[in-house]
Length: 513
Ligand code: 3NM
Picture 1 (cartoon, rainbow, N blue to C red):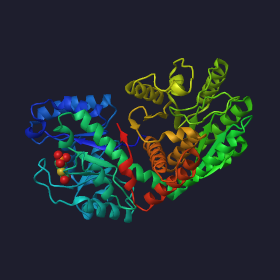
Picture 2: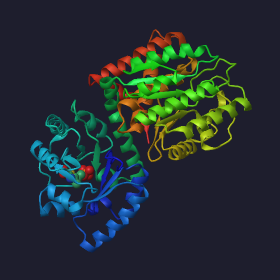
Picture 3: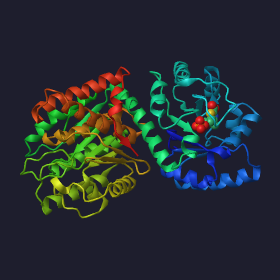
Picture 4: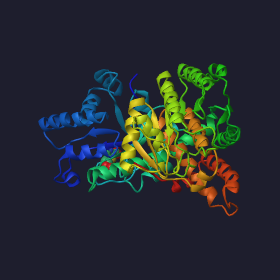
């Protein structure tokens, strides 16, 4: 099955001299791809056919390098001229992407019925780029079209909006045009990127805005589905885990999941059928515990349920702070424990596939093959942000997983897209088990939002961090003890508000590309 097309940051090129200036289109498109554009359409109404063909070939090669789909406006036009969209589908075959522009409910329904892959809905705002637009429909017009698509059984069609979209209005347009039953997949832009002084930076900012605007979709999916979050933590010899389990279960409930703490792998096959996800939190490693993890991992892989691996590194004789963040309690060097843990992680990675792997810098670097000795506190940052992002990206590629490296700045990547989340609060580091509870939070998101695991993990990380900030800011919170109940309350409030379409908390979210 082909990978789903990512429509979130859709670049439409334009040869209008005023927009491109004297720059080279191929260079601009390449920069935009570096900045995170997810799909490119070549649109050239001015050049000769020969130039169009030559440019299209070059652009296609560039897009292939970034594994980003490339569409040609004229080919779809030609196909559409020959017949209706159904005919265009016959002409181009099943593997081609066909998009249709719609500015009314009628046009949208007609295109959806004819089998279009996606709709470009607009014109949202009047724009200098295309003067012959039919009608300016605004975010409300987009919302009407989206809700009618959903109401008439076409909720599955992908949609972007187009016309006058830029970095400052993207988030608002995405939010305002969301209908309860259907929201946009992304935005399509010409001038916001092509005319930008720095197209790579513009694409980066735009894609962060789009991702942020989609965060509520993930949280609403959790609220709607209440997915099972099956948590496995080895308890042997670590009484504190029981406390953590209770905390993790409460956090799971607060974010809208249905948590179950079940360490006995025989149950996993039945639980895996319930459509939830599994968290393997490698507390202490014992041979029995490892066997249990492998058995459960296999059960979830067989059922197609996502699994999150949290390779927590700690030494059993110390009471650890399980928060994986930068302020984690000192964990003494212990080559023996590290070797055992490394070998256990290796066993698990060989035994099945993980949707998400989460760890601090030392843990992720270890997965990367570096011989890092876990030091706790100031294992902090030995790497620059760019180096961390590069490690995260390559571990994600190596394991075909979304990788989350926690820290003051959390970094997440699926190997193709890499995002940073700068939310959170230092009080998280003063309470045991917050790292585990982040794992539980993310597991709920990935179970409820399988269409985009990276987005789901980013959403969970951002929600978690914002709730911590809100809790820490409460008048009654004086330290770690009063922080915990406030934190659970804030997670609950954020979930409730989002489910009721109040996403004001998004203004606190710091997601960047
Ligand atoms: N199609 P900008 S508006 C190519 O409404 C195109 O169908 C539109 O350019 C439509 O992002 C448009 O610079 C131009 O406003 C969009």
